[in-house]
Length: 423
Length: 216
Image (cartoon, rainbow over all chains, first blue to last red; front, side):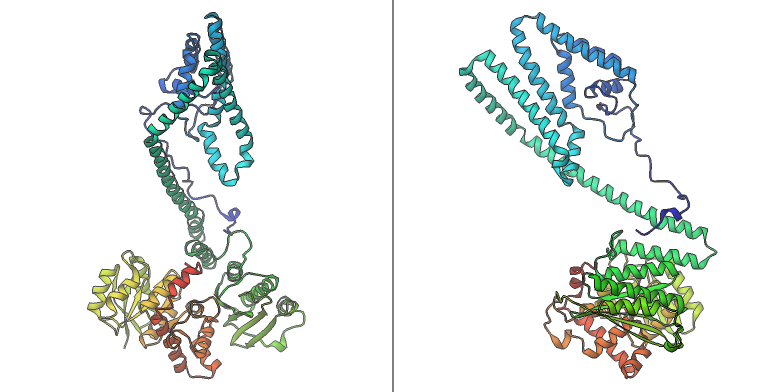
């Protein structure tokens, strides 16, 4: 909207950040941390939930990892099933010392796992090796499909997936390849090629069965997502309306209160605001910020500008509509100049602008009921009518006619033929 | 004798404002009653039998068009003048087709409102330039407009079109009369017949026209 925020006094009320995070702390479920995480924020989330120092939680995970990797499995499961903290919820900023400790504990846990793997003999070494590869692959894939990532995909899908998605696709493919290699090596090691075919069949059958069994679950999930999206859209709409009213109507009312003793200024503000709100409510006659592309939009916009500039009322009526071309743009500019002339010289509070689009031509009438003038007595040095209106119209093949007499008001008739009779 | 006016608007403050303005400006107009909802309006108009009803277009339970539907057949002598904050084509055309004799927006000055009330009370139609523009647009016989099924009824005569065009250009009835070398009475006749055609032109589906052109 054409409102200049620099003109405004500080907002009367800064109420856009209404507090909504007033949930009861006690019932809060475990949420993985978003900031200050080292692997996936699981330890941090658990620590937040239990109310203990994150160091101890990490230490326990590391220690459990030494027991045949139990800690790592527990961590992985929590990673899978605990949702991530919603974006925007305030969290403590990460502490560099804590982070160093965490990295140390992570290295310690991996070391312990490798050590126990080696200690328990060469056979299990053959199993843990491929398993480790597969798990790293799974971790890569899962990390890519993390909630935050998925949200980014959703947002990115609208603007074009390729832009943001190429590296992610590569990473996901690499992860899947790692999983496949890991499992493949594991199976070849334990069973040999012959049994492999049978094992693969069994795996595929099992996966199929799982997929079928969980169909209701998927459906529910999809429905929940749809419902959530509906609620979000509704909330966003309401927020948009509130923001618009706050930015426009409330600000203008505040300004009017401040300038109540200047009726001219109050009228100007109220008129401008009325027009803006009307456009917003009853249709986008004037496309915001960009230059209008149709004749009616351009005439309405020009009328609005003059209305604001000279604090009087300009009433545009347009019958029919068509796309603007350079000739018609010149016509609109000439009409605007005619309105400005009327605003300056006629001494009236209201000016009518009437535009009509016909198949072969466009006509615009600008009329006021003001003083009027005698065309013979207009001084030579007044360029407005001759150049801005007459010259402009003639250059584009149009015509100007002026009807005026002293005391009767003035009407400027502008006619522009349409080149391409496209309709 | 003063014109007896009944106010229908769901905003009590607005009713109070109009009433105060009308009472203070002139003795030609007398406010005899007011209503804040469709139901109240139907009862109140039946009771007071005003000359003119100033009718709001947007009200919670159906709006001005609903009042017109319920009252108009029973009391054909009551004249309705729509007074709305909206000048969307859809609203204007809906109440005109329901039988209002005129349409003015709430930004109208008090003197002009009094003039409009007196004019509709005398059987005249009140067209704002904007309303004239809508009607012209709806009846345009240019390619792309809806097909005409009954020329007698649906088409405006060239004269009526001229009158409307001058109205849209901001001319007063008197000025139109001198412009076209006809009497003011003839101008009024033309305007009334335009109004009648607008109300009767069902097949033309003016409101669909409005929505087709994304005016609503």
